[in-house]
Image 1 (cartoon, each protein chain N blue to C red):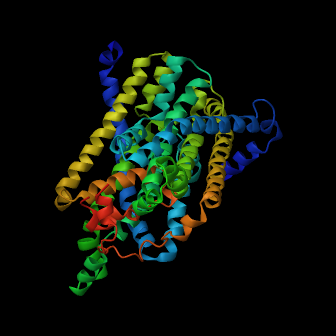
Image 2: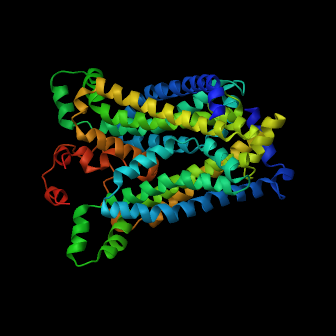
Image 3: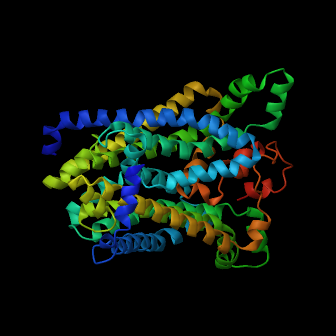
Length: 249
Length: 245
């Protein structure tokens, strides 16, 4: 514990670096995946293609991606932009499926009612479909957040400062506490981000709190993300998610 | 794009390809880690996952563990094991086993769980024992998701096995380490290409396996088009049975 107490300042500043690298990919990934997910959901032919491409993007290992990006973007190899872009690619790859599934899960009757009320396609999307897709989107975003936070540390291998520094430095100097403190700090960031997202969900989607489908959607999204998004598992495949009559069981 | 050409030139340089520290040897190491770790993880996680899926017990704990393990930074885990149990192949292998467990576990239990409860009840009504229900009904029907879990475990490990060099465990990361130390960008890009291609090839093989190993009865009943399905409440066929569970 001595090492931790003596180096709290270092841990804190690396934690801030870590957070600064993790937040932009999560937000950018969310924003970019909305139109792509919308297209995947809207046009039948595009769904398979877009989901396959995003699955393949997620297959690209992170360290090679961080190394290859400077060659593609023309940035310096030590530039933090590489890590941000790389993590954004992963965030989009994970999130596109969530967006497509979330939009698919919006009740067709509600969509028709909105159209009948005179909403234009644009208004209907932002005022009806997008908010109703909220709980499933949030579930996807929570998975993206956890995975991004844990991937940031790989960036330290190519010299971008994050909590991963504690791993490499701890290895060199043979200080196990240093490595452990890096792991704990990473987990804490993941937990705090997750709590913030849940809190944001409570505030922005107050109707979802009483809705047990939200919890189910979250569980299902985690399972899908872990057990292979390409395996054919889809958030709305679970009758309990898409079928309100079973939601209470 | 010249950098990529340099990378390919590095890969196809005969001096880099063969020999004890050559690309082929490193690929073999990377694949040994991958299949070794996934095999060990399968022995632990698949029976457990099948049990959770069959009995429905401990599901929330499994989800929580899987989510939590996902948040663990694998680099940190690898290094802490390297410092704890020493360098060599053991620390990376242990890390990769832990890395593969969530995928395999949730693949196994989600597969069993996704089987229509009416089918399971029908199997019981036919007089099947619990073991028969599991092995003859739930397992075959849950196979697509189970293989999906193995596939995602393999992909995660094959990508992360690149880090094994931090514990002096060999594998393709050795080239990345050399490249970083000597600022040899051709080597860096070349090694990155090899790792990426390896992951994509495995992904392709598993996509194929998944098609081949799925029982025909499963694909026949599968709804492929999500949007065409009505999301409105269906007639409550079968809900009472599920509620009785």
